[in-house]
Structure formats: C-alpha cells, structure tokens
Image 1 (cartoon, helix red, strand yellow):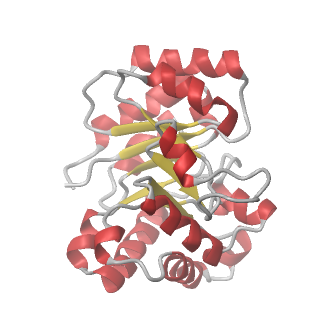
Image 2 (cartoon, rainbow, N blue to C red):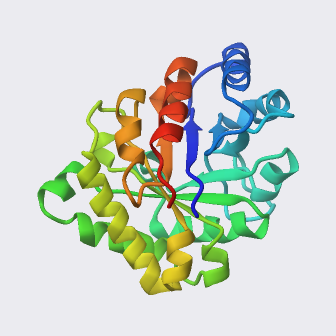
Length: 257
C-alpha cells in the first residue's frame, strides 16, 4: 500500500520570521495521525530553523537540491551529507526550474540521485513536459527519456526508496492544471516504465506525485486517481490555509492503493 506524500516546495520565498510562522501554523493545524505523509522544503538558509520548529511533529523536512559530490571545492553548493546532518529526510531533484534556469539535465539528476541515496535521503525526482512538447504530441517520449536517463543504473532495491513527481511544466505556477484524466494517464505511463525497469512489484510500491497548480479545490479529485500518490505543491504551500486544505482533501479522497 502506498502512503500518499504531500510536499511543500517553498522555492525562493519567505524570510526567517514568515517561515517560522508558516511552519508553526502547519504543526498546530495538521493532526498528528494522518493517512498521508507531509513534508516541507524551505530554502537552504532556513532548513535548520524550520527543522527545529518541526521537532516532535509528524511533518518531515526536505531540501530543494543537492550537489552530487560529497565534499570539495564547489563554492555555493550543498552536499547530501550536509542535509542529512541537519535532519533532512527528502530532497527534490531535477525540478523544471532547475532544468530551465540552472542547467540540470537527466544525467546530472542521475548523479545527484545516487548521492542522495548514499546518505539515506529520499529523492523526489521531477519529470514533465513543456507546453510545446505536449501540443506536439511528445509527452510520452519526453517522460520516457527523463525517467530512463534520470534513473539509469539504479537497482530495484534502491528504486523502491525513491519518489517520482510528474510536473507538467505548462501547469507550474500558471494556474493551469492537468485534468485528473490527463495526469492519471501520464502517471500510469510512468508506473509502466518503472515496471519495465525494476519489475511490477517495485513499480507498484513507488509513489508518484502530481505537481502543477495544486489547490484545495482540485486536490481531492487528483488524489482520487489510481496512480496519483500525493502532490508536490509550489505556491499553495506558502499559505497555511491552502496547504492544510490540500493535505486534508488528500486524506479524504485517497483510496487504498
């Protein structure tokens, strides 16, 4: 059975005080025993503060990126070991904004994936097509290439430790959302690829999140789909009302999977 995972990606937002206020609201308002797993991924500089605020709660801590080397002369970078050292459990890899603005590729995501697993971090590997690719009918090919190259060389045992996030680039921060049917179709394709790579049993255990303008109003219908196992939430995770709403809607809608 796959436990849905709702993750808030704060991106480059909030300051120290507003981060503390938001996370305290989440701790106060989210029940201790949920049918889902919840985590937040603040900017690097606030990870330790947020981590302290989350102590004793059921909400996990994650980061938005890592570098693939464990240490060295890599100015401005952060290693997987550093994240583990301050209590992180998750790390987002290959987000479309990282690919678009900072040169992340399937190959670099693959290197980061092994670094994360080597430090017992749970990697959230992002894939997704642009609007031009979808309109050109290339979605299936793009997703297939991203999955196979990003997860290349992974053992079935390690694959069981990862999370995939399908984020159609055209739906991130635009207010546009893939319909539940559109999202489910791609999620089913991803699970099929994972089955070819790692076996059906492992593929059925891997959680596949949806990301792209998720809101309390659409979370329930999205989460009710057979192959959607949670959400990677951007803008809506910066507001306690909306993020809590997404979490609660997901609890109510998620069938046993």
